Image 1 (tube, protein in one colour):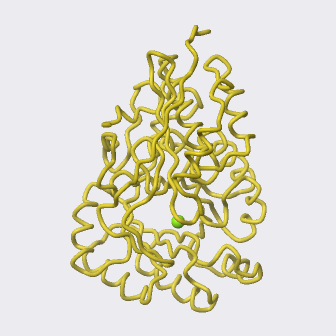
Image 2 (cartoon, rainbow, N blue to C red; image 1 turned 90 degrees about the horizontal axis):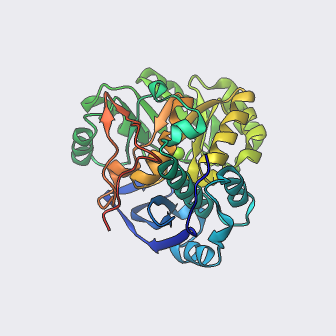
Length: 345
Ligand code: MG
């Protein structure tokens, strides 16, 4: 099927995302995240995408705006969309900018051709796993408030790596009996202490642990932690692209795949295939994102066992409708494209 199209138009603007609650991690706290909202238009349809910029990328919204100003959108084509995705992927743009363009093109192609993205990439919505709700480090009053916000979610993700992880987990357990996973965001440096904490977490009902130690921790420590851990360990900061997988397979049981890290739906899909071949288990995650980034990732979620896609629920100014949830899972509908709804600005 071929489509006659007007020249594709690229638009973009900076949009600072504001969090509902101050977000505290092992390496600091913040109240918002820079983003650049992107559209690709063909005259009748609008494809949405976004680049979000948590501090660990070391990029500002102005860096992304400059990349997009210099990007020649005339190289993108609806009819040759798979080639266009490869052109984005092989460009020298930063990974969040690539991810924004990759999403916007998927959304536009889906809208023009009348297909949801899961059909374009061959995933099965019925295989969607439950979505987590993330709780950052906080005091007891704030914890109770957050648990109320998390009432529709069946799995909780606790951010650890603070001064007293033992106390934080005990406090969580006092108010919530749901299964949980934990993410110290590279906050643990000592293997023996980490192993003790892992046993404690397992006893408290934790199902997996994400990135306990720094990505640059000596390999001997990382290999020992993997071999002696009583919980499955998933890489996050240690895997930013497909090139990192061989080494990650030595230190982790699984990997948290994020579109912003690897440059969009197409490269994330490739990364997942290679990770599975290496025996790594799969989780899909997000940064502080709007519904567009999270719904884009949700089309890949049926390939994973953990769907860590709560970004829009934690934002105070998501410019799209929140993703629809049913029974603790994000719904993939038959709406064409990403299915993130219409942007409210
Ligand atoms: Mg993480």
